Amino acid sequence: MRLFTLLLISILFPGTILWGQVKQYTTAQDSDPEALALIKKIRTKYDAYKNIKADFRLDISIPGNAAETQKGNLCRTGNNVRFKLGNQEGIINDKAAYMVQHANKSVLINNLPEPGELNGMLTPQTLFSFYEGDNFIVAMQGVEKYEGRLLQAIELKPVDRDNSEFTKLRMLVDKTKKELVSIKAFSPDGSNFTFHLGKTKGNVVLGPGAFDFNKKEFPGYHVEDLRY
Image (cartoon, rainbow, N blue to C red):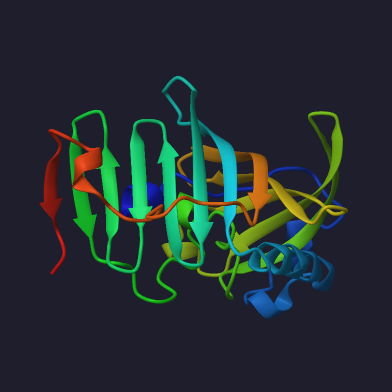
């Protein structure tokens, strides 16, 4: 699961509140109330949907490497998720997490994460919920222009910085629509990962077995069960 943990989280932009002014804060309870309220409204909107379907783009920037862009999509119903990202595909249901690598025609079957284990991690599975819990100190960071739109920036810094894979995250949100627009994650080594959300629809019609793993869908693939 660590591969997908490394794929996603972040945030950018200057703001009305400087982190230098609040760096003494060490718990999520020290967060900006306005930022918390906005995040809660966004979460409430997404949680109200029976399911969500979304297109997204992931920009990857790693020092010393050419910039990379991968396109993906996902659908989610409760804790069940199915996504595609580049040459990878994931199916997470109530039985296991199935990670499909199309490049080498393999499928790895993993145990489901423990409850709360993915809190604070940015993955396709947690794209609409990574900010839940008490893992971040959040603050409003002013308004930014993004693809012709004026959007609110929110910055998140991990409470446990020593054990976090990211130094900070930045979200751009549409305050009026209460929607996530982009999420950028900054790593200590200078790498950053940015998710750009495209079309996001709620309460869509999903076909039967949308979150089932069917080996017949992947003929010739090697399947390895890593569950214990």
